[in-house]
Length: 395
Image 1: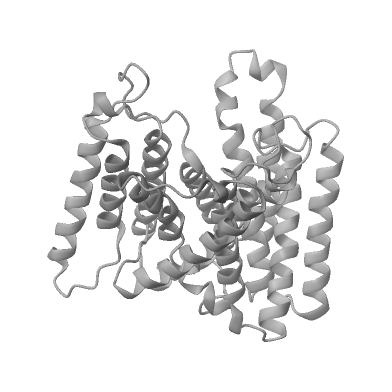
Image 2: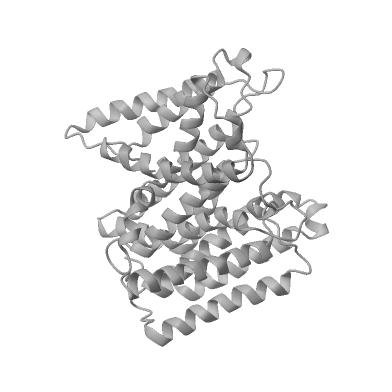
């Protein structure tokens, strides 16, 4: 064990994850609706501003960080060796990278060159993903491996036949890693840091500063224009890792029993942490605009501070005040984030394959916004139904 953490599932973290997933589905859907307020849209790269939409992705990163100490300590408690733990981390990272690359390339598929419709290719991809990463309960392990093997074969074949671009000559390549891929890199780096510093809060705090410092270093002319320009390729990953580490540090404040932060000590530590994030972000803002697209330090720190505030409120409401019955609605999505993340795309490609389109009124203004809210809720209900029939994904 690295830290002496609170045992059992942490309901405030689950609730935070479930709420973030619900908002994610809503903002992804509402992005296709015309006539919506500007505060429901992503801000342009150079706007020096952000909306709640720009906080959804960093909230995912933050929650990944909050969960890492529990995940690593759980595997060690079950008897994993050091090497088995590293294999698990690498497997999860590779899974996220592969999923990210496939999802990014889907919309660019050239149907004529590939030989099958885009919707069918996408549905076969998601079907293969479910086969590979579903949680099976067969008593004979070989049956599970047969399903997983079929899924892996499906992914290899789909990747091999893929052709993209107008000329149909592009292969399946990481044009960018996609949201899942970016999470994968940040997860990998954060896991390494957590183990290197043995879960010591002070070390994690220093690495947050180091990650932000690395991003700033990469923006300097002698890096961008010199022989070290290759270092700049990791600037975004460093920024995202900083957000993951911010979540990790908050988890240690709340749940590391060795730190012993209770009552007023916990309040003062978390309040001070929030203040440091906000003040540092404000000090960096003249030099670095708030920009999700460029993953600027100001955006990272402000988003991390917002996540600290949201989680602290949830902890107060759920843990201290025991107002938790409402969290049951989010529980299936919170325990199956990958399935919930993919489900809207699966539904979209099913509709495309069946040549079904929604009424035009649902893509405009207030009716479109209300439909997106309803759609997000329906996705969470569908996840619960899929769980009941044995479909649960775990990387």
